[in-house]
Image 1: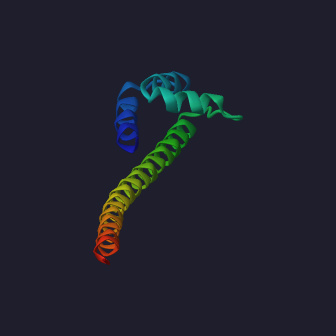
Image 2: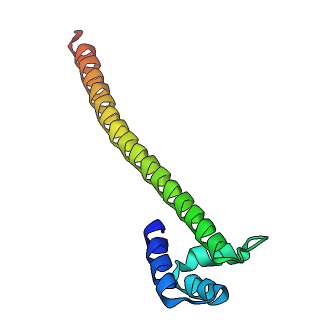
Length: 109
């Protein structure tokens, strides 16, 4: 988002739009989800600077939450793999124990 805003500011300076027109252009160009969230807040941004700031904050928050989700998924996958290996070992140990008990049971006589 920061890179987009830098480019938008550059173009805005060259075009010399009025504040209201800049806000409308910016709203149309940003991600639809971010735009909807900013419009639905209790006090939506009114100036172009507020739009820049709020859009950047929402984008950062979204990226952080995505990283957290990715990390949780990685941990979950790693745990599944670990549990699978442990379970295989337990199954093997159980079968070996059962076989050895069975052998003793049948070889007692």
